[in-house]
Structures are given as C-alpha cells and as structure tokens.
Picture 1 (cartoon, rainbow, N blue to C red):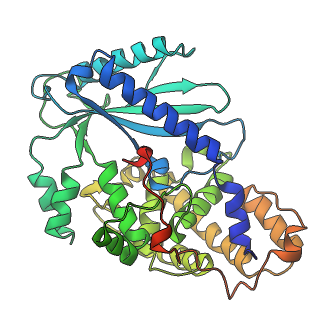
Picture 2: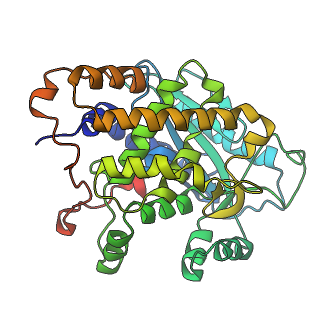
Picture 3: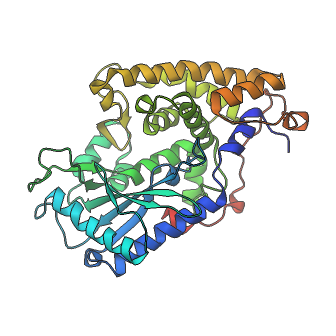
Length: 381
C-alpha cells in the first residue's frame, strides 16, 4: 500500500507490540497483587492505566535507551475516607503495599517518591517507569457535574464522567500532613472518554448504540491519535536540549482534540490542528481548561514560569513550518533532511521509490468497518 510521508514517520514512532504486551503484563500483575496479597487489599484497590497508553498516543522514546512511561492509578474504593486520613498517611499506605510488591517480584530498584505518585523502575528486556498515583473515591460529585454542564457538556455525560473522578495526594500542598476535605481531584478516565469522542464522534456514538466494544487503540489508530503522536515527537526533537521548557503532552493533546474537525487525511488534520491551536488558548483566566474539570488550567505553570509559554509558541511556529515542508515537499533528499532534523527520524531513500503518494490524495485512516473491530483488551478497562 502506498504511503504518505507522514505515514512513514508514524511507522517509525509506533511502539512495538512487545511494549504493549509488557505494559499489559506488568499492569495486570500489580493490580492482581494489590487486590489480593497486599496490606491494602481490604480497601478493594482498582488499578487502571491512564495517560498516553490509555489514549493510544504513546510513542517510542527519542533515545532508544530511555525508559517507557506507564502511568497508573491505584484507587481504593471501599472502607476508607479522606476525612479520617491525611494525604501523607494515605500515600504511605499505598507505598507500603508497593514495597511488598517490589519485594515479592524481586525488583532491584526501590520505589521513588514523586509529587503525586510512587515510581517503580523495571529494568529488563524493556525498561519501564511505572508511576502509580494513589487515589480515593469522591463521596459527592455534584460540583464536578455542574462544572462540566456549564462548559456545555450534556447533563447525562457530566454525570457519567464525574463518577470516574477521584481525589489524589500532592506533597506540595500545605495541608498534606493534616486531615483536610479539599484534596486535588483527578479524572484521567473521564478525559479519555472526552478524547475518544473527539477522535471519531460519529463512529463513537454509532458503536455505543450498536453495543460494540471500543477499538483496540494500540493496534489501529484514528487520525487524531496519529496527529498527537507526530506532534509529540516533533516537540521531543525540538526540545531535546531544553527538557525543562518542553511543552507538556496534555496541552498538545487537549488543543489537538479541540481543533480536530473530522478531517479524513493526516495531512488535512495536522494542517488544521497546528493552524487552530493558538486561537484555542484563552487570553485570560483559565487558558487551556481540562474538559472534565473546566476550572483546572493545564497551563497553570505558565504563570510561574513565563518561559514555558514562550517555548510553546516557539514550538508551534516551528511545527507549522516543518509540517508544511513534510506535507508539500516532493524531493526525497529534502524530505529526509526534514524528517531527521525536525523529528529525529531517519528515512531510507528506497522508501520514496514506491511509497510516497500524491499528498493531495492521502489515505482515509478513519474508514474502519464496524464488524472488523476486535474486543477490548483488559488493559483499557
């Protein structure tokens, strides 16, 4: 099958199936242990994946020796309330259970404490950072529902998504070590539902009505997922030497999801997304709101460090220029140069003899037959 330049780039970005299989194995193993053999089993912990693995937007690290990031939540669902435990004690409770897991599985590295999570380091055939965020159920989700409804999310959807939210710990908060009602709220699964609707709104509704399981996101991807992947790689390459200024993935993913308008080719979609991104950033107040919690601003750190905002706009300007070249350029040498310098991807000249098709034709990657959709794997439950 003939391929466009963007498709060739994406083939080089995609994670090998072995990475997903390893992620599934480790995620399920941790969940099984915590819910059966650990000191927190009585609280009925639920372990589920979040972040780029959940969204289907994970990509290979820019440097092969870098570890994959697997973000998980460990939510305790019964027998515990934030009114009787501090964030510090709650995080340590989950941390003790993770220590038991590390010991039982003979993992060499001790867990690391991060601001909101515990990190487990795996170092074998495929290296992973497994960041586990401790969470506790929210007793009353009415405020969350009302917030989403005000941002034009339907009442029915707001009720459904609010039930997926939970409270998390944050060791930077002044009330971290005391009993407090006001913990930070997180809702990565609600965000994933929003992103799925933005991926293919018409097909998403059709599948829900037809009773089909959702697409196996890591095997066959939509246009929007692929656009986010290639945008993230361009960002990674551009800020390889400026890690602290690198635009965060949640901003890129959210703006891409808002900008995507159902385009049927990668070329049309990526052009539309980079053209619209700037106009979707608010000028005052909450500038890039969380779709499932509109009062949360994904650009909150821009206020603390204005260089981050400047870096984002610098990246966006460069992205527009580089994607324009990748899409319109006909000369193989020029394409290969931009692929390497702009994306860190080395393309072979032989690919251009039979693979590159007319950029104005493209390929409809959204055309997926419903009866061909495989069942949903355990990883995405």
